[in-house]
Amino acid sequence: MKILVIGASGTIGKLVITELAPRHEIIEVGKAQGQYQVDITSEESVRQLFNKVGKVDAIVAVAGNVHWGPLKEMTTDQFRIGLHEKLMGQVNLTLVGQHFLNDGGSITLTSGSLSHDPHLGGASFTTVNSAIDGFVRGAAIELDHDRRINSVSPNVLEESWNIYGPGVPGTDPVPGEKVALAFRKSVEGSQTGRTYRVW
Amino acid sequence: MKILVIGASGTIGKLVITELAPRHEIIEVGKAQGQYQVDITSEESVRQLFNKVGKVDAIVAVAGNVHWGPLKEMTTDQFRIGLHEKLMGQVNLTLVGQHFLNDGGSITLTSGSLSHDPHLGGASFTTVNSAIDGFVRGAAIELDHDRRINSVSPNVLEESWNIYGPGVPGTDPVPGEKVALAFRKSVEGSQTGRTYRVW
Image (cartoon, rainbow over all chains, first blue to last red; front, side):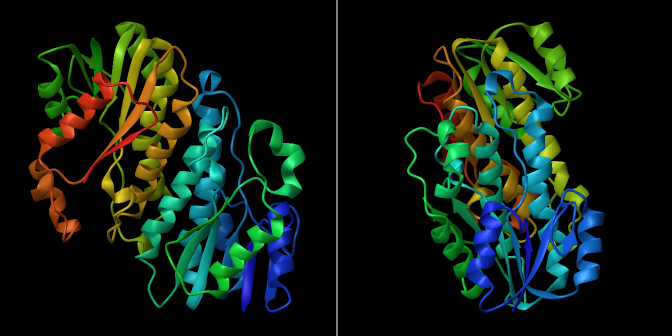
C-alpha cells in the first residue's frame, strides 16, 4: 500500500513507520521535515500536498498541538490552539484526503487517553481527543467505496514519559510498539468508525 | 438560586425555564432576545455579560449552531461553524463564567445524542457533541469550591421533530420535559463531570 504519514518525524510517527515500512511504501510528511511539507491547519496547504502526492491507500495523521494549562487561567485563544491545530488539522486531512483515497483505503487519526482520563491542566486535550474520536464515528458512515476511518487513542508512551509523565500522576505508560500496532490494525484491517484504545 | 440561561428563547431553553422558574430566579439571555444579549463566540462579549449580571449560582447553556451537510462536500469553513459557535461558545461561557460562579454553583452545557448515534450529514454535530461531553469531563476536575459542570445530551425532541426528524431516520424522539428534567438534575443535584443522556 501507498501510505501517507503526516507527523512522520514525531515519536509516534517514527514508530508507526517502523511498523509499516517492511510491507508498504511510506510517504513521510512533516511541518518542516520529511519528503513533503504541509501546514495541516490550512485547507489550501493540505490540498496542495494531495495534488502533489496523488492518490494513496492510507492516510495516517499523528500531528497537532494542544495547549496544556490550568482551566482557571485558560484563555479562549489558548483553548483554540488544540481545536485549530490537532482537531481541525486532522479534520482537514480527512475532508480533503477523502477525495484522494483509493477504494478500500483508510484514514487513521490520533486522539489520546486524556479523553476519558482527565488530569489537571489537560481540559483542552480532553476536549480535542473526545472530538477526534467523535469525528471518526461520524465520518465513518459517510465514507463510501469501502473506505474507512479510525482513531488510535494512546496513553502516554514509555518513550515520552520524561516529558509528559509529571503531568499525569499514577499513569502506567505504554510501550510505543503497542501503539504502532494499533495503527497497523487500522491500516491493514477492515474495521471502521473505531477508536483503538492503547491504555 | 440565581440561574443564568443562555439560549433562553430556544425550544430547550423555554422548557428548562418552565422546569426551573417555580423555584429559582431566572436570568434570560439570548443573541437578540431576553433580558441580556450576548455573542457567545466572543470572549469579550461573554465577559461583558457577566460584568453586568454579576455572580450567579448556575449557568445553563443551550445555545450554538452547527453545520449539517454531507461530509463529501463539507468545507473546512463549514466544519468550523460548530467549533466556533456551539463548542467555543459553551467553552467561553465556562472559561469566563467560572470566575462569576458562586461556591457550590454549577455549569450545565448541551451536547446531543449524535455524539454516539451518527447520521448522514451530521459529522460536525457528532464531533462537537463529543467535544462538549469531553470538555465537561476535563473541566470537572479543575473547578474548585464545590463548583460543578455537567452536560445534557438530548436526542431529538418531540417538539422539534418536524424540523430534525427527516435527517435522523429510525429515531424515537424524546419529550421535551424529560430533557428539562436532566437540566434540573444538573442544577439542583450534586454530581459533576457527568453527561446526562436523554436518548
